[in-house]
Length: 145
Image (cartoon, rainbow, N blue to C red):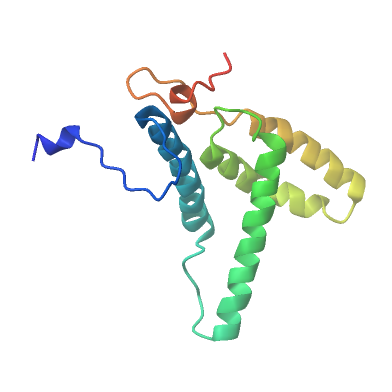
């Protein structure tokens, strides 16, 4: 069993031939997508429902997907350009701003000011550099500093 721990087995349906390093980089990028879905499931409870009625379940799913879309839109505007961004930290920051956004909704200028205050905060939601277990952005050479 310990001998097998040194192995990485990747089964793929890629039609092009990739080097081992390129394949591992693609796998790391794919893992980031999986982490995004995990984030949606954990923080938005996309895989849970409070009802047994099909129409209520469908409405709840649509509301959660709309929330995920708005959340992702804020992340794209606020921190997507940062290679070392932490979507978990950004989503936590968004949750803290929800009451401010709700209060600002009735007046466009107040909403605009609130969102302009939020976006720079999202850019500060970063994954710290690690020497022992480098983060994906470090392994892919996306380290901006």
